[in-house]
Amino acid sequence: MTGDVCMAVAGVGLVGRRHVDAIANTAGVTLSGVVDPSEEGRSYAAENGLRHFDTLEALLQAGGTDGVILSTPTPLHVEQAQVCVARGLPVLVEKPLATSAEAAAKLVAEAERKGVPVLVGHHRRHNPLIRKAWELIDAGEIGQVRAVQATAWFYKPDGYFEVAPWRKQKGAGPISVNLVHDVDLMRHLCGEVISVQAQATPSLRGFENEDVAAAVFRFENGGIGTITVSDSIVAPWSWELTSQEYPIYPRTSESCYLIGGSHGALSLPDLRLWRHGGERDWWSPISATSMVRASSDPLYNQIAHFAAVIRGEEAPLVSGREGLRTLRVVEAIQASAEAGTTVTIPRD
Image: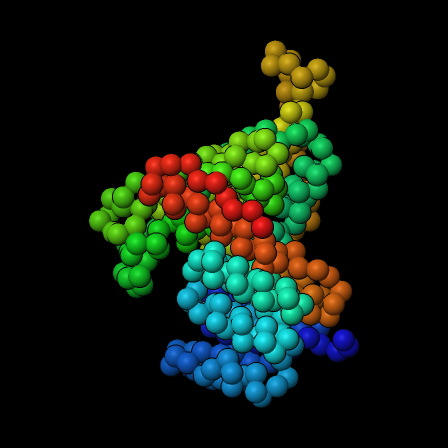
C-alpha cells in the first residue's frame, strides 16, 4: 500500500476526538470522515470541517477509507466491527472490546478466519515507558516475576456521574470502566492470568455498582498479583495521576505498580529498578537505578501503529484476541466478587 492511510472515526465523544487529533498529528495518515448521528457530533464535524456521516454503512459506501476506529458505546462494538470485518477493513476498537467475552470471542474468531486485523485500544501498551518495562522484564533484569502489586485509587466527583447516569448502574463500576486498563498491563508485563479471587464493596454513594474492589491473581508462570481499584478514594496512586500520560490529570510523583522478581524489583511509572549491589540479602544495601526511556504520546503511537498494520508492515500489538483475554480476566473479577469463589480463566 502506498500513499497516506485514510482512517475514519466512529463516535466523536471525548475519546473519539482525541483520535481525530492524533490522526491530524500523525504523518502519513489522513481522516476520511467521522460517524456520529448526534447533533453534537454533527456540530463538531461542521465546526472542524470534517466529512460527516450518520451511519457507519454510509461512510463505507462512500469509499476512501482504509481502516476504522470505533469509539462508540460498548454495546455497538461487536456489530460495527463485524460490518468492517465483512468488508475486509482493519478496525481499532476502543476498550472494552465487547459487553461480554462471549460476544468478543465470536468477533475475534470471525476476524481471524477472514484474516482481517482487529486491534483493541489498550493504548497504554504504546507508552514508551511500558515498552521499556517490558524489555527489562523480558531481559531478566528482575529475574522471575514472583509478585505484582497494582493500585488504581482516585476520586471521581459527583458531577461525573450526574452527566451520565448509566455510570451509576450495575456493571458500570470501576472494575469494568477502569480496571480493564490495569489488568491489560499486568497481563502484558507479567504473563497470563489463570485464576482470580476477588471482593467488592457496594458504593458509598448509593449507586448500583461497587466503588471499591480488590483481586488476587495467579499467573501462569507461578507469580501472584494483587490489584485494588476505587473511584471513591482520595489518593495519588493511579496510572492517571502518576504517568503524565494525559495532561488533564494533575501529576503526582508516586508509583502505582510494583513488580517483584527473584533478582530485583521494578516500580512504575517512575521506572526505577531496585537490586542489591552484591549478594541477594536483606541485610545488604539495596539501591535503585532510574532507567532511561523515550517520551511520546501513546495515542499518537497507537495511530502510527494502526497505520503500519493497515499497510501490512506490522502485526497488531494489542490484537482482538489480546483484548478478549483481558476481558475474560475482568469478567472473572466480577464473577468472583459476586460469588465469593475463585474463578478459573478459560483458555483459548
